[in-house]
Image (tube, rainbow, N blue to C red; front, top):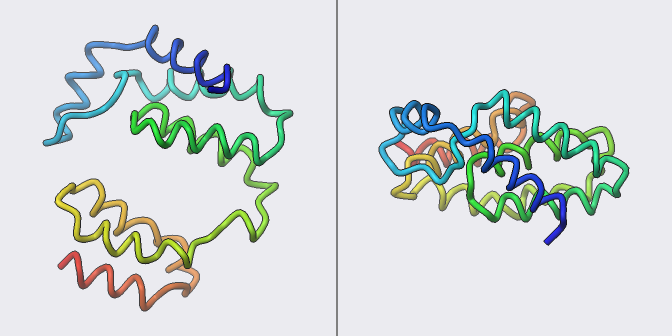
Length: 145
């Protein structure tokens, strides 16, 4: 495990807030897998930790982000989003394998988990605004209906 992940996790744990747990649970029928940290605090911690790795290669940062995604913990997922966006100016076409994963979105649309269904619904909003993947968007919409 990359040392920055261990540091990030420790900081998130140290900033856990019982009030956030109660507040977050009001919005979810399913139990949340979270440290219960306020969004502003997640951003602050994420920014401080990113400063320690920002000189690393994009592929290394993507590898760290993937490990954070795999944890399934809400705050770690949020940090993965922040960090992957932090290197967005370095994105190249080969960084994206979107067509290969469209079938996954269609499976997500059939999930019992409402968050997976929601992810299927919102994942293609930006490309759809640009007229991309419209057939897939409509197919996912049909599945959700």
